[in-house]
Length: 260
Length: 294
Image (tube, rainbow over all chains, first blue to last red; front, side, top):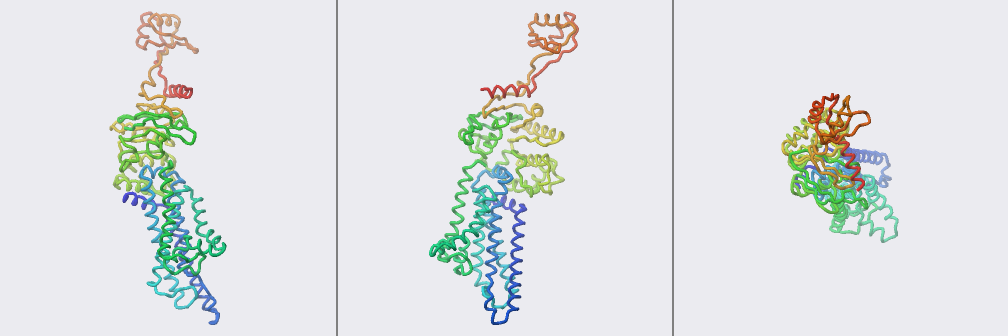
């Protein structure tokens, strides 16, 4: 298993799309800094009585939301890239245990996604604090890092969940297009639809959507998102695990059964 | 040693491989021939554990491929030279394979040199020609110094130097006692490289024979200014003589020495005496045509 992990790590590192995706995450962080600068600029320009009305989404959460799609795409490419070129047959000749290949890819992708997500969220937080400073803009938490850390860790965990979801979808569909389309649906389209169905079902279903889980896991709820907040942190963690475990099990069975 | 036993593989209703049994023995190059769609690549994929057979089995060194630990050290394979991700370099591509099978970094460098890619070891594969990709695929097959090699159309896209290089490489590997299974569409190349042939058609075994039996001497072609007298003399000596359209005689049952001696005894001048063997191509065409009728 160590050999498979090391091999998959080498593969992911030498894949061009990996640096591309990580570059896009860097751009996301830069955009967040720009947004912080713009918010500070707006706030400074408003007369003191109207400053209350300026509200800006939590920048680390926004960064996380965008980064989760980026790393989900990284997860997709870690598998679909091999199906697209036929390299998957080389991989399964080099490592004949398909379950081990899936596990190794999942391990590598999860760690890369968690670390990248945490770095992006922390960098956005730091940039936001530096730029916004002590301006009390609504939506921007001025709490110390130690108080925010549970949320940031939960956000990073949800990025790893998205990346693994992408990896498993790619293994199941063997197609980058199909996998990314499904991901975008789960990430963006389904939450909008769910938000528009009648209560109480909008919140019930909204609470178990992947994008709503980090806030519930950290116990902060989802004040600024479409997602609901009915789950306890432990339940949110369980649902998060299910979003990975179910596609993973399907992918493992299909990989073992299908001809490569 | 590769053992294929009663192997059957279906894709939906199509039977790609149909109860196929053959053995590939060490110490010689075994050519694997058959028309397009005969099931060669499918058989190779089943041997490598990529396709699941409906029934039967394929064993490499006595075990199923997917039960081998560090398979690259036991079996080297080249199925499709295009099945690489272009963003990597040869060092990167062979590097992860080596790591997966606990093969040393120095071995990666040495196979890259062996296949003649040392100058482009750090260049992206995307810019490689088909011939260079074939060389990279052969480097991957040789990486684990395996006792068994399976190569599907390895000379595709190679220049004449490359074709000759592969021939000498494979003959050398077989001479070291390794098992080499080689598929190719190029009959002339196969005739020069393989010692033994396995021919399949429509997923079934047509022939499993040494090369020299397939290309054995068939007849002797003779020209003479006194063809009639010669024909009578040869027939009297037990030969079967047939006159050919372009002049000259086809003689069976007598070899060229006997024909020469006989002509000298009767003082008949000879203008040409040529022993003729069937080319592999002719034999192959005949075999696969018969196989298709069955």
